[in-house]
Length: 262
Image (cartoon, rainbow, N blue to C red):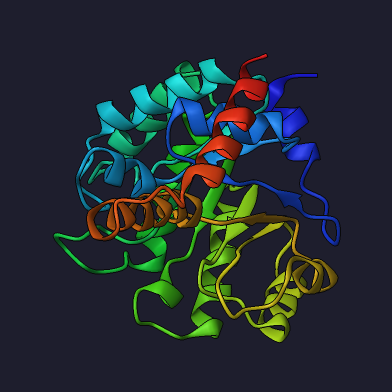
């Protein structure tokens, strides 16, 4: 079975694919070794690993990073390709052709124009860009409606956008920030493609989201920043008390990584 077809088959409404986001080859190997069936990249986590903010990484860097994760594991990898790193639909198509060349099983395109413009594309233009990505990518295309993480809490518009994106060729739909069970259920009922949901603190559990019809659940940059949080605590302990309370966690991580390499 082709990798894209295999990856898409993992998206089952009510029995969602748990797809954590890796930020480097090492984290990808560890996550795959723990039994996850597919992995995603994280734009914010990868940017942090380079000492940058989300949105400050180039297309060439992202494609090379995605290829490194693909090479590191034997499970499908889907990449966060932001807004396609392009202004025109033609350039969007080229980005997704490069993504296919990197060996990715899938990738996402969002309708947020980026930090410099700080705006969401008009729905028709956004759908045109999704269509260009779909034409340039023989893999699982996820179309993202960014309203709810960009200060636009408008579920009706989000649903209209997701419906337009599925008609434009998206295989999976994603509206990060739509998290309430009733809202997830409403989106699921309004579209004809699998819905991906971002797991958020204080929101519903995986079980509750599954019951609402979610077909995929990811964590964004949370795992990457959890790792940085552990680093911060260990460093503060070294600076303040000079003790090694972090040793047990370090030993656990070292053992897990050795297992991942075996």
